[in-house]
Amino acid sequence: MNIQFVVRNVVFCLALSRLIVPFTAHAQSQVLGEVKLVGKTKADKTSGVWVDGQYLGYVDELKSEKKLLLMPGEHEIAIRQAGYTDFTKKVVVEPHKKTEVQVVMLKDPRTRLPTVTSLIKLKVTPDRAAVFVDDAFAGTVTEFSGVGHGMLVSPGKHRIKIALAGYQAFETEVNLLAHQKMTIKTDLLQGSITQAGASIKQE
Image (spheres, rainbow, N blue to C red):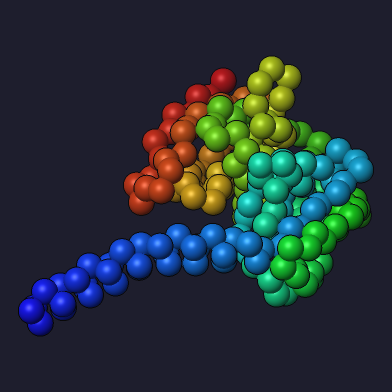
């Protein structure tokens, strides 16, 4: 009799735990707050977004189903674009509330474009991944893909890194001659510790 009572209690507790876990996860999602990033110019809309040091995408895509939902509390938002000074702002997120941040990217007066250039084209998926040249954010893959698009860099050696949250970052080093064209093609691997494979075509 006692054994049956214990067994019934165990079964009841297990069933109860199955009800509590989904409810708790659902309840947690209900306390999130939204940060809405608003940009007017092309530079504002295509700049990369970092929240607490983590790259999440570019300004104009972080809306609708990809809207920026954060846990309540203080967060640091950094917006970056090659040739512009970083836009940084600390925001305090409150549950169920939307915080709007007006992004204004300003030209960096220290930027000097090279007089002689080489061209790097990218064929990378996902095309929303961030592109870094010599550790500096250059833009997103989509800006340097397709007909008539490419990334102008100075001749010589450069470190190229392509990264996106949830994917294995791809890194390579290129050594370009003046006016040389190069295509880097790779598919980032989702959630893998193995380096993404890539092909580099020189022209």
